[in-house]
Image 1: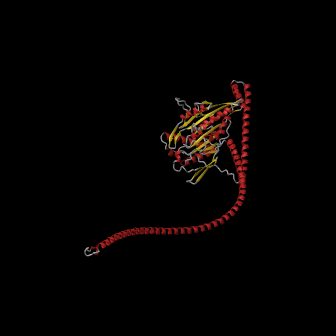
Image 2: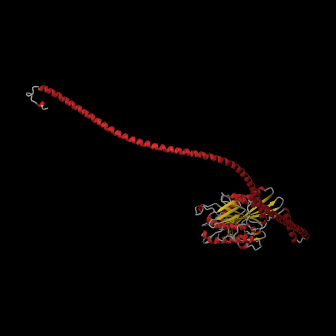
Image 3: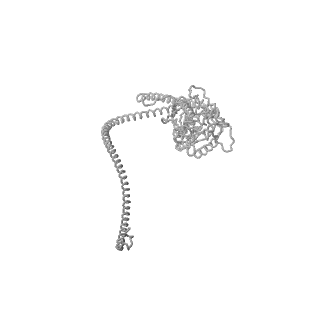
Length: 578
């Protein structure tokens, strides 16, 4: 560098030096550019190396992760190998167990065949015993019905109404304390007292029973009215237990009153070729011991009515008696009578009957041979027994409840007197109700009682009281019902007696003597009929004793027939106020 700064005078070879310097400078510049290029290349290479190192580091991490994943898979494979070996061992054990089970199954199948053969034998034996039991049961019931017919026992059926909506939402409503072993028995289970009370009736209707089913069980009794037998059917139970629904019903579900007349009309039409029948209807209610005519026309002045004892029995003179011949006429009368009846509302029943209602149907028949028949059908809807503490009655309703309970207690006294069988005085005149029913409860009629109860646990004590009273009624013997009417011969003789009385009034001595012999003939005929009835009664009682001894032998041999236990002990009288 110093040489390049020399003066030309001092360096004669200056041009050559300048040329060389110029070449050198270019070379240096080129070298510098080359070095810069190399430096840039080195920088790029260094950047590439850095990038490569970063990628290497990343790849190293991925390799480590891959190694860990491989290690994990190796461990998983080892676990699966162990599980596979365990499963294979379990499968081997299961195959052994299956082989043993198949062997046991073969043994069980062989034993099952033996058991099936034995079961078939037992089933056949069971069916045979079941058939024998039913035969004995039906025979026992047939004899019982004969005995009831002869002794005049009050037939009793029980109907349990469905649960009401307000009762389903009450506490304890889900507790079912009523059991139905069969169609003739009912069991009340008092869980609190750990007691069970079993009752036997002629029929037990469960809550799902229909109006038609209830009526069908009573239709044979109603049909006997057309043969000259008087019939009384009355509904008894606490307030709100379904008595009025059973007896009167609704337009959609007709009750016993309407269906009874419908049946009588049907029998009349069926027998139109052998005789003529006429039907007369009266309706009364006993309200606060006063008798009211329910068939009064609107605007009629109420009459003072009372029960009188006449030669025709207990009657109420002055009643409106309407002849009916069609069901349309019956509907009109039912609506009129229902509209005139006293009803009220209290805590136990929104439409409680406040009186005893009695529908009387008088039937007069005359056959083509001249014989006459006459009978009465009494359909009684008793007012419900009440506990004042539950109904919260006051004022007029309290007076009504007192009269209702007093008359029902009088009915209980009558039943108690009838069940003692000692010939004691029967207090029929203690209430208008019992006085009106005296004919029916004195043996001249066939009597059926419908006891209605509530399925609500809240009413269990009242239900027990009603069932006990019904059981006591079932033991009352009223005597054999007598056919009301005259045969053609008796009708002829009665006409002759009438002529005799007329001849006596006219002092016809010859005619009197003639008709006296006819009177003697009439008395002998009646005595012969009474003797035949006594013989039939004796023969049926002997059959009952014989069949009872046969039933005892069957029970001792088969061991399946139920023992005929005593009726559940009844209370002394229906619960007062309950």
